Amino acid sequence: MSYKLDRSAFSMGSSNVSEPAIRYWKTQTLEQRLSASFYLNSVAYNFDLSNPPRLDRTIFTMRKNPV
Image 1 (cartoon, rainbow, N blue to C red):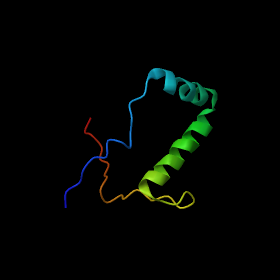
Image 2: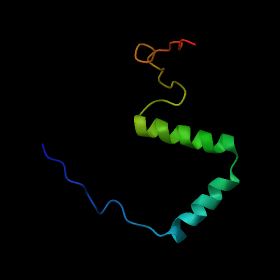
Image 3: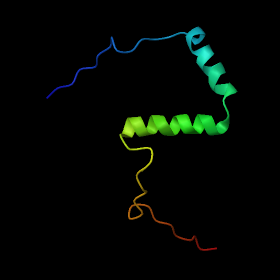
């Protein structure tokens, strides 16, 4: 199966278009910005906000460096 990029789905924008969005997010508190980014991650990775996935500790390990 071959995939083709739909170039009509996205368009290039100028900085004049993104400035209001940047100004809006700069007025929000850090907690509100983190909450919005957490919501966008939940939409992108399709997980429930009340039950986020846990870190698989079998993949990540810690060890002490010899001093």
